[in-house]
Length: 152
Image (cartoon, rainbow, N blue to C red; front, top):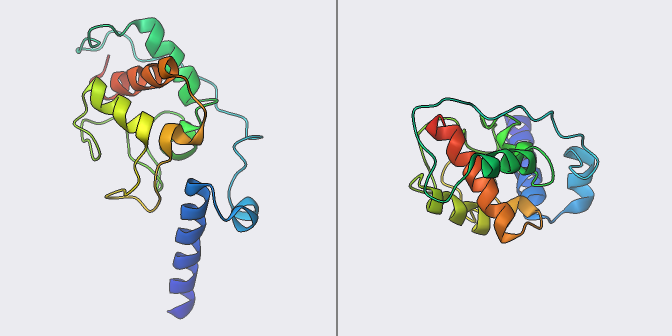
């Protein structure tokens, strides 16, 4: 039993250190290096969904956001390349929102500011996933995430 608790505690601390950018010596040995990891192939966002994009959001923003999500934004590392979630981060495909109300503006806030105290997952989400994104890129990622859950 002690070994199981030790393993779980070690895994949790490693995830927390990785997500927060600290503990790099231990985290480097145990977690994937997103700087050298090959991002998954981007697939086109779903087409012909029932919901419409929010005012000011274009299909081009959704496409650009998907490229950031599956590449330089590092979002795929915790949310999975298709947004279905992992043990580290929420499923973005459903309509259940944990840290926002699911509106486009709410999603922008989460992408911009991260989630310092997650309600259901073991590690914090750094602002912008730990990447350096412009305001336009944050809005594009939010457009893509919005499209995932709305079926757009």
